[in-house]
Image 1 (cartoon, rainbow, N blue to C red):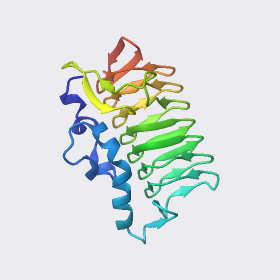
Image 2: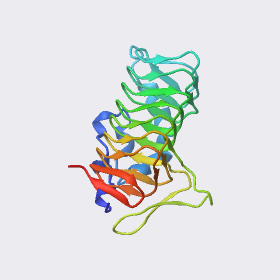
Image 3: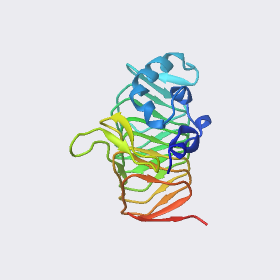
Length: 223
């Protein structure tokens, strides 16, 4: 993928998230990650009281959303209409959970944006990451958000590496991406729209749009 393919417009449909304005003036989607907490605290108080209920400091949950009583929820947080937070989900804060999305059993969220219709339904970890419209992570798939040497995360590109200036950055998962069960998306992974990742994959770097990731070094174009 070149620099242009890694831009916000080529990865994410901003009409499918409450957080569209957080991307104003930005080029790459990961530039939004440090802004999530502040954005939620600014937008939360402006949400309709008819549509949203404030449940504690910095927590706004749509009245139509389903939240299991066993879920752990910390702010800042916005849960949008018709979203579902299932049994034993663990939301640590600085998260925007989009309309009609699913956060499932034992799934952990931290500093992330989940677009409309995205699903992380079983034993997933989503940290310092963005999941696009109708993206889906299979059971046990996680975003690894910190390098073992704690150095700054870079994103490889055909035009040269991009320094994100972030120590914590998991993955950008584009619209309509399917990630197979028990896959690990290493820090700085970017997956283009409509791509599929095989189960048990260890993904590092970038995957072009409309591709099939079979294993490292073997990526096929969807026909």
